[in-house]
Length: 569
Image (tube, rainbow, N blue to C red; front, top):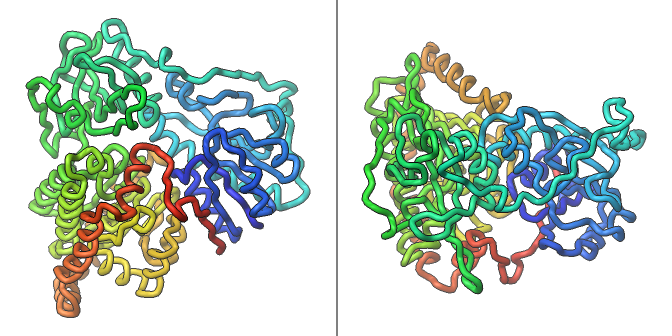
């Protein structure tokens, strides 16, 4: 079928729906609909067989849903209605939730149901839940709904008839306002504070006052040892700040300044960077790399071992890696290489593996061009270290999505293992960049020159399954998000103890020498960085406008910027 996706943005769920529907043989187009925009003209341009709205806040008008079949994906169970489904679920600490695909009609969220899939709700942040358990349930529901639609025989079920019930209770809840999110630091328990922070971690954040100014707090993690006067800052760690609660403390990784009327949108930044000179002198509460996993505290990099396998775990907010992140991860990688292991696994976070350079930090820098240059060089140094590791096998384990330089970091390893729900974006074009991180070496050696050119030019998301067919992925791990880490550990231990691991390690030197003789890695880096530097230091280059629009969530005024994304497989 010809399927049109209508969405506020080409976000992680929209990308996954797009990629997996394409894998199932459908021709798919994506159109972004401005908030409170009218998609009528957009739809008429496509004349689709089916319209799907995987993430849309604009109301689909009668002119559209009466002319075309329109299915809406809602991150809530049947009967739950209102604009803040996940915010309420996380805030209330529910343990079971669901995703519903229903037909758009005159009453919001009340259309006949094509599919409804339940899911678990672990104690994680809203964005983490959305990209994992919710996304898995959404894909199951979407594929089921599309299959039922294409059959031509299935009749959607009225919401009052789901699961044979005569009447499904309707719970219509309002928008989750800041008044509901407000933290009472002197009275709220740590558990309550965490729920409030997690329900707003990515957007919109929790509005609060800190050091005499108004900030949006983004993200929240438990601290197991530090305590102090409620509301006070206690320590810093890796760019985050630790703040005391009524009965403990929490770590807050990111802050966003509340701007005044007429001011440009503020940028979400690592907390210590956002506070700048306002930050008082606080102790740096460091955690040794090999201890982080044994404590109930937040740390963004840790190292562990099991058998002959070493595991370097890292999880940076939003998957972005600043210059500092890259340098710290490189130091941790060098430590991991000093350990006598046969296999070293790079394990990203649940939500993301990596998205490459940190556009927010770059945008907020006094000299964005210089910070762009420093950031890409620091990431290149990390990727080079992985590419030149010849004394052990290196595995990239992707439980979350990867794009741009983050995808190339993953591809630098000997093997790439992906959870089946992962989406890859191995390209840079949409940000107006040529790309670096040795992609001119890593991509062709895996998929060939012709497919490399296609991936870079199409700039389309690739599902994990499609990535395996192309050669980007070596192993698919069919596991729930909460089970992925344990599965990777078992697989890596088995690999490290297998009889074939030693011959493979022994062969790495000769392969690296052969590739170096054909074209040195330094030549790849020099060519890539020359083109990147030219863009960074050209104030008129599209990269700067696109970066600003992306970071500040502003509309991009640029010829061709609103072009649709299409694919057919």
